[in-house]
Image (cartoon, rainbow, N blue to C red; front, side, top):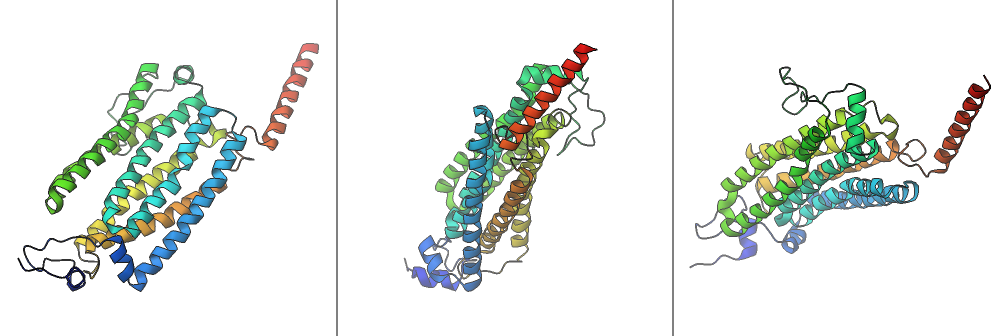
Length: 339
């Protein structure tokens, strides 16, 4: 069999086969970084710098949670959530440095998103004081569990509403809990398919992608349903802002990849010499996601200042506020007692 020099092959084309017996493959990290052009090098440097800033901001967030949040269970949920931006950005950056791993690192980032969705639900339950307390509060205020929620039931007015019983709340939570397990299984199966079938794995990967999207939609639906019940109870904790940020970040990860992949299929990205159009779409998608995660991290830093959020109950200003509130309550009780 006639052989082709690896370097010459990759520089001739990476979009079509030169010979039928020459497999199409992505460049190794060493080869890619050695021959990277100026545009992609600049994107890589910017992505690296912005990721470093995200990690630094995450340390600030971690310090605030560790220092000013007294409840350990609340801390643990917040740790998972504040790790979302650095973890997803690092995954994207690895995919930029090592193009062969782009799909794998993206799958890891998506798995972390599913875990964060469940952390949002767990945090909600904790802020209510437990599932039983949540069910009691909702029943007392005559709130029903509405299933007219996005992404696919917001227009279904015919859907019945459920009583906020503890068992019903647990069932909705399971809609969110299934996502990390399903996503883990899908990631493992996808790896096995790629290792075994290589270039013939595309059709099977589409099936796993569809299953993953279905699982994600159910998780988002369950999270929206539960979060909608928290609007009146816990506004001082900024919970809805937490949920909206995680929800929007997940939307960016899901929709933006479909957009860049579609652009690649319509030949918006040119061929080679190092990357195929689909690989270039992954590269640009990773870069944009890093920038967007940085902006969301900045927004989170501004929205969740310890001085303005009741989540940080050990912050000095909030301690003084609690003492003043206690004094006011005592004075009110004394006045009422004299009357």
